[in-house]
Image 1 (tube, rainbow, N blue to C red):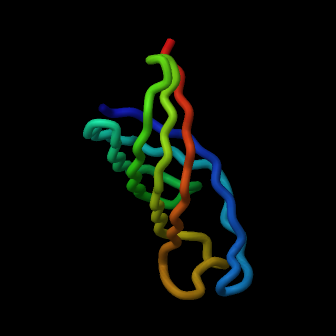
Image 2 (cartoon, rainbow, N blue to C red):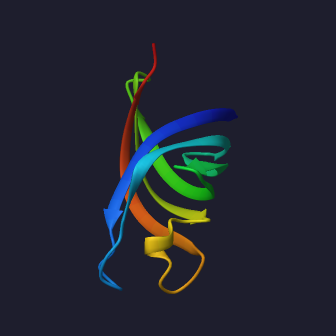
Length: 104
């Protein structure tokens, strides 16, 4: 399955101290289902920075109406703002997520 994702993001550096990175992002996403598990791979932009992401989630369906998923996602962005370039040319983070979807 192929789709798109639009998101907001924002965080402030703690190590090293300083620098705030926030804005809007957009990804083209390919989803590969494998039973109750989904693997997602995407490429796009976070602000003006090129970025890519990978995600793995597992879930269950409630009454064939609501899809509930728990997963982990890793995001990488390049060409980051100059005030964040303390130890390299990119920024990355990992987050856990819970998503709910409804079938209409």
